[in-house]
Length: 373
Image (cartoon, rainbow, N blue to C red):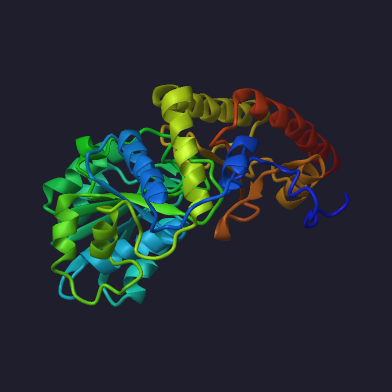
């Protein structure tokens, strides 16, 4: 197999079935190539406002929506820095690598951070959450909706009410599910719901966003030493003028404005959620038919990224590289799960037909590897 290198002339020709960044359609790339005014101009503010309004519809919220020039990790750190006082305790629920990352962010910022985790592949259940919350008084609770490393979707519709009953603020990392799986922010009373755009939103990396509640804004005003770049109060103040505190990636914001219009007014939100549900179901059917076991506990599988166990004991690295030679990229397991699992991303603008084409080729590769192992 010939190696894949940087394509200076044409850009990448690989069809991505990864957990992000995802394949970007030509219509989005065309939007990004359009000229822009400055980030303090009226035309920019009008574009920024369109994004804010679109995000509110997408998240079913009346809360303020903020835009950050960062990855989602930046807003994960913002939640820690802005919402947890020095003498308060923060609880981090973890079901995988990115739950662990949020806990590490808490520790590295000098907060009193407590991690309550489960075996990777399992979710946080309402019962587990209640037991953890009974142990102490927590000011803020942090949880993933979709854990990208394990392919587990937490039952947040059942867990978040338990958290809110404790009196804590709740922050949700929806990085690999927002715009692919329905999240009703106001119904669940989520204080901060965050994501980045390079996954289900289908926009190139460089931009993160979140909704923020009045309770979270009020709490921010009580916290000292919030830092400068990710100060929620500064972000909120600038959002009143439909701006950001510092220069944002304007082409990405233009692309996001166009993509939100496409999602809301062309595909339709419910149809988009339904398509992702079909993609998840089809991938799980394929895994079953070829005798790969799903890594997540049954009933908690994600509809945006599927993680399979290496139950056939084949060379996962060779499987991935052989598929890459055919023009498709999937990925090995994350961190400690490397070679023990592999992941297929099916989010953004992927269709069931696109997925079927890739899975047909992958099936032949797996068959060949099994014959020769």
